[in-house]
Length: 421
Ligand code: FAD
Image 1: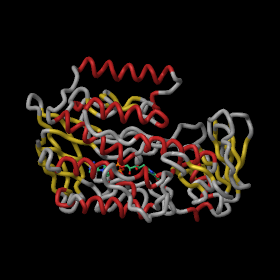
Image 2: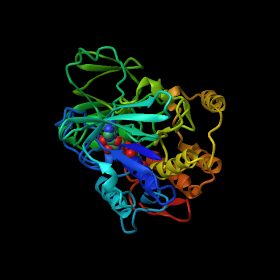
Image 3: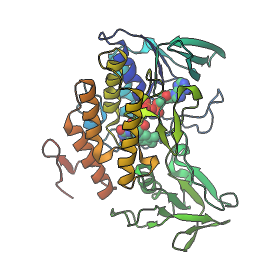
């Protein structure tokens, strides 16, 4: 098969690695719009637009350390080397991705500074047309492929809630996508909106510089973790005035900065409508197993689920897709795939989850992994990964300030203890 891989982040590299493996010997081209592999792990001081006029992709900030231990962060058969700290820094992860790339000799297949502008199925031909711009010489080419793996990431298009008064607020409003270093917050009063992993991590980071940090979230209870003294928690922000934020309980606070840590939108600006994939309230649909386009099963979107063992899952998803594309497993009938997606949506709705949580795995991730492995008849991911992920997510919530420290030791396959203070 001739396969296009879009993006050379952790997902695109896994895709490329399995496509070129001896198993299938596919012909493959990986297009990457930036000048480096590594995707969001590439730190760039710049925000806004790059020299080619394209939006900066990465959301990486300077001080970032992974929020998962290294045992969870590698690929199934290419682990983060012993000797690295438990919770790797961003540079260690980027180095690791470069090692992966070299180990599997992926570079010859990657076209850097190639921006995919349009992907569309060719009517009646079972082929894909991929329009790509070579950014260095501004030349546009159209290439034909049998299948496409979309690996463009989903932490680059900020989700900013609509709040009355945003247009009159005189302070600064920024999204975590554009955050790099804390200096900007020196002596400022800041409201951080959102208490996901970024909101929590960044509230803590900027508290060293800011005068006061108000962590606003819509959780019904206060997050039970120890924050520094200048961090307080409040409910939702319902309005902005010229200088103040108004909270759901009617209280007001004067602030200098509104810092949106409100997550990201799934976005596939290069997929033509005829691809049959759309984003509905941040649920990507219609997909079989969060992965394969039901309208056009030779289109796969790698890496959509979140709160997962990311690199491991990318590897599993790619192996799943290739088994089907190469006829070792058959795709179910279209109606059955649609039914399976609708049933999962209904089950999630029953649990009180909204559409935007459709791709959230978290505590249930192991079911997703074992389902993929069983259906495709491929080597499963070790169960211990999900357990480690879930344990460390709990630790993150319980002890935000110290959870990366060595005071926690793994005592058996998946239990941590906090052994000293
Ligand atoms: P990306 O890394 O985003 O790569 C996508 C690539 O596609 C990019 O290189 C981009 O340039 C390219 N691309 C996009 N559009 C086009 C186009 N049209 N044409 C050509 N190329 C294109 N995960 C963890 O497991 N642990 C963590 O601790 C962790 N921390 C994180 C911290 C931050 C701040 C962020 C933003 C994410 C974090 N993640 C973490 C999640 C992280 O996104 C995943 O681990 C993983 O790196 C995602 O890989 P990806 O390949 O799917 O996407």
